[in-house]
Structure formats: structure tokens, C-alpha cells
Picture 1 (cartoon, rainbow, N blue to C red):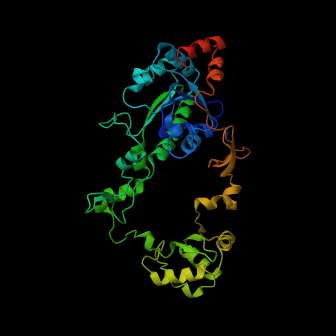
Picture 2: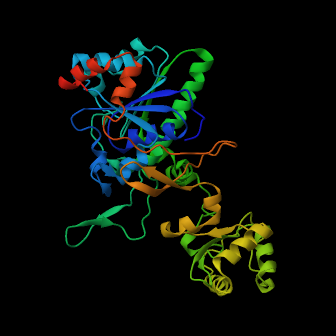
Picture 3: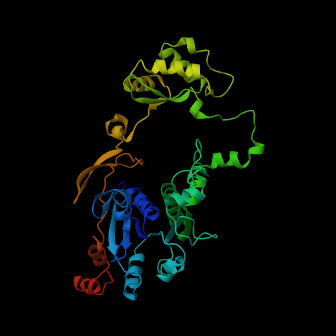
Length: 402
């Protein structure tokens, strides 16, 4: 973790990826994230999808690192009392619960604000906490679908639904984009709290976030009658100058010399002066749409050097082109390694395994990972810090409260 949010305590409640990823982002930034789970099953993300061992799914390891886990049954009066004492120590409360779940648990914004008036409260759900769909439970693709982020569909002759060939999604993954917007909103809320002393309620819809991430595309699509038809963007898959090319070692590079100055540099450095005239310098950029002859010539050129040789040329001569990597290649990339984007996590059960670092770099700070917690791993540690004794915790555990 980094230290940007050091000293900030976050209480998290809810299950699955939206709220988990939000807490993970805040934990990666140095916040003390306390994940409160039910004693019975907890966050069942632990056993969804690929698992490295029972209770240790890849998704849980990724989205719940740099957190502590406490088990409290908020459906009981004693549990609500424990929750209240914990919330009183928090700066931020994040929840993935939908509908009136939080109100029933005494954890809605009004109740939490009574305990901590300056709390920054963020509710992150698939469809948001208001609107006609607010009470619908969601999974990830549902968020993408509402945000126009899944491919267009059609019914085939066999009565099966399939993506329309060539259709492309407008957005991305709601369980990634929603938490990113939410983390920014939480940080903004903390800034306002520090300046003015008041807390806030933040309502994040992951579907909204998918849509918002494609603002440029949305404006063009929603206002097609106002877009100049003489300046079409074109199909980038048919572009010669914004295109993937194979290199001599059968790896790939993404070439993006659409500006005249970069095209000129590339032609000179690659000994292809004969291609200098293959650029419309009257335009701000020239993608070379549908120029298959030029695309063929460029592929011939890129086959003369390895991927690394082309990357070195790009760095030395200020040319926009870079490696196009597969996941099985990222651990060998010197730039990603130098940026700290790959590191070894040492897990108490699973041992050492490769994971990703954080894209947020702070000079002088080294990003580190504390492994995702086991269910209730930190219950005693956290509740004893609130003044409870071991004998009290034993009694609460016997009653099923923790």
C-alpha cells in the first residue's frame, strides 16, 4: 500500500466485487479498511470463480488485499451496538447493500450520521440507490449492459442469442469503473470534510460509471445529426498508421504514427523514405484508413527487427509505438517491472505468488501488499482496540454475534 490515505479509517460492509474493489482501492492507498462480514458466511466472493485454495479465490485475493476482516452480525441488537462503536472511529463508511437493507440493519446514512456527523458515506451498487431499478440485485455484466457496455445482441436461426458480428461495447466493466469513480468521490468527500467539517452521502451506480467512462463516444452517438459527416472517425481496425504489427521475433507492437512529425521520424529512422509521401499533412492526423498497400509495406518493415529493437528505437527517437503484450509476457517487460507493476505477495496459506502493484506511484514510498484476510481474522484485534475484553468477545462469539 502507499501512504496517501494513511490515518484514514474505512468501515466496509457488503459483498462481491463493487464494494470489495472500492475498499481495495482505498486500502491500496493506505487507508485502514475494516471489512465487516457476517459470522455465518461472510463475503462469498472467497469461493467464486478460480480458486487457489478453499476460501481463497483469485477475486477475493485481488479485491480484498490491504484490509482487515471483522465478523459482526448486525441483525442482532448486540451486533448493532458493536457496529456503532466501530463506525464512531471511522472517517469513511462504504457499503454495497441495495434497497432498504442498510435501514433494516441500522446502517443507513441517517443512522450512521447520528453516530458520526462528519462521516463520508458511500453506497456503491449496480444501479444506484435511486431510480426505478434501484432495488434490483445486480451482477457485473448487468451493470455493463445498462450502461451500453456489452456487445449488441441478435437472435440466430437456432433461437440462441449471440453478439452481432463486428459489434463492440461502448463501455467497460462496471465493477472496475464504478469503484474507481467511487474512490475519487470518497477522496473528494474527505477533502471537503477537512475544509468545511461536514460529511456527505455519495451514491454511486456502476452502470452510470460505465456510461460516464465513454463521454466522448456518447456525445457523438447521441448527437449524430450535429456531427460533421465529412470528418468520420473511421474503423481503427482498418487503419495503417494506428495498427498492430508483428515483429521479427513473432511478437507484436502497436504503431501510432498518425501525426506528420512522427510519421516523418519513423520513415527516416526505418529507412523508408519512400513512404514519406504517404501522409496527408493537411490534416491534424492521418490514420491511413483502408490503405491496405501501406499496411502491407509497414508489416514488411516491422518484420526486419525484434519487438525490443523497435521499442528501443521508439524511446531513442520520440516515436509513438510500444509493445502489445499478452498476460504471459508482462512479467518479462522491463518497463512494467521498473514501474513496480509486478510483485510477489507472500500469503500465509498460499505462499508466494505474483500479483500486480498499484498504478499510483508516490516518490519515496514503496507499494506493498498485505494479503486479503480470512473471514473474521482481525475480529479480536479490532474489537479489543475498542475496549472489549477477551472474555466479552468469547461470550459474543458463543452467542453468534461475532
